[in-house]
Image (cartoon, rainbow, N blue to C red; front, side):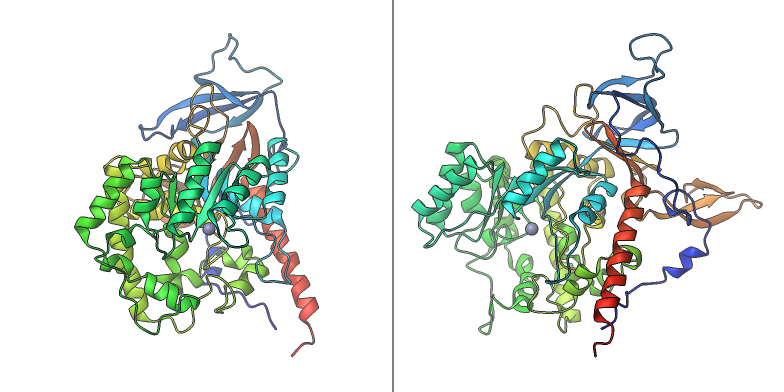
Length: 525
Ligand SMILES: [Zn+2]
């Protein structure tokens, strides 16, 4: 067994002039990293508010006791003036935006059975991608509740956590059993419920009980007797992925061939790529209207299915070289035993159908938003060649591909996420009085969302300085490619985390896990 890592042309990067995140000598950890201070002042920042209004600045953002206390220029004399005890981050040339809400994720301590993956690996990657809030839709409930408390107390370095456990059908799946289970999990601290694969009577029981208890609900509808019209009618808070929406717009049911087995993931994900093409456009518009009318949010998680439309891209992401943990690397290999690893003989026709599916699906999400629907961002990473953090960064790019302005995309990722969680009175915007969950970006993400990638992005240097690649060039100007961008600081509850430090730790964890794997598999055939 060897641990060969798939890379694509990444070696060429080493030859490039690099700066910022990409510096070959990892930068030293600043003293501010992971330290709470009474007051933190972010100076000279361009501010992206989160609600799609244009950026403003450069101005200063003052954080006091974990909250944004002041936005403006810091005067020489007043309660907002800089004091010697303040922590200061100079954000000249940088953009500040709200922390990202990853509305669909799972905490994993292992992907391939038998290869442990330290939980800090995932925490660091999410923070490095600017994620300050996570909505876990299904996981190990007791552990996640513990981590939620530890994150809240800042005894661990982690985004904040909302816990939506999978609704259990109990022993027989009777509505009474499901109701009892929901009452119990509410008592044990569930923040919401994740619903997957229900019959109509079960769903009625779940939604009724959830409404009585004030629990929010998210659903992965799957291909079931219930569709988005049942969920919308019964008042679910969010529909995840693509399932169920186009199903409600079919004339009859999806045209599955007779040899279909839904337990075989090649069948499941191959045929799933044919779904939207079979939907009736007028019916699709009607189900979108219903979702808007019933205030159902749509969390499409575009990035998690992307391998289905472009497998080679998914298998050759440059950051695999330094950051892909062996537990995930093994898990991603084509196998019917691992959920989401359905790439066995994946064909050009399957990719072409998925590409068509994306076009229709993205148009549907845009129509939904234009009609007033709430669109959020989630990455569902740890499956299908999607890495934590990199997945959410890619998700934002795909929202732009769907036709949204980058300011709207950032709104999906921040302010809309706060609304989804019912936190819109304190989270998701750069606003005085709001929780100081902030991201400081090297460059302007409105110009290029790729700057939010934890690995940084390709940028152009003009005479040695980052510049727009539309800049006019004189005869003596020198344009060079380089790697830049990246997030410099992710701030949660006013505590700044230095992203290059988090990524260096991730790289070390991966190197150690790979070395250990070489040792433990040495000598085996
Ligand atoms: Zn999921």
